Image 1: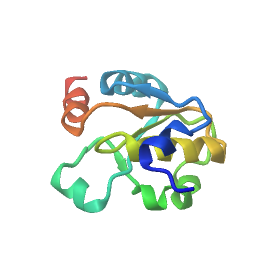
Image 2: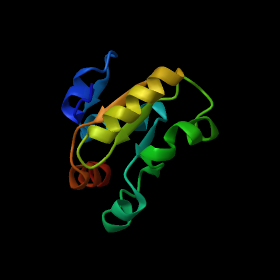
Image 3: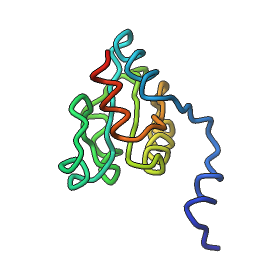
Amino acid sequence: MLIDIKKRLENIDLDIRTITAEQAISEQKNNGGTLIDVREAAEVSKEPVPCALHVPRGVLEMKALEHFSDASTPLYIHCASGVRATLAAEQLLKMGYENVSVITCSVPTINQASTND
């Protein structure tokens, strides 16, 4: 049976934490966490998030251990709409990362939050 993305997201069986950009930036200052942008390169070039590490969703699982060798590292995931960020968070949690959050704000809001701190 085929399912659409809405159903796919509903079927995620993990409790994925969602937070605002302001929360993420504030926490990041205190915990040394990393903001990860999982958008495609073309999207990032049009509207970059300078404070984020760009790791496209399509290669995240292959690059995660290269960038984050500590399972307790706080990871804050964002994309354009939240869909890829949620799917990325699910995979990172399944890989053993313990502290993963999805940022639910738009890219301009993330950029604004990062310049306000």
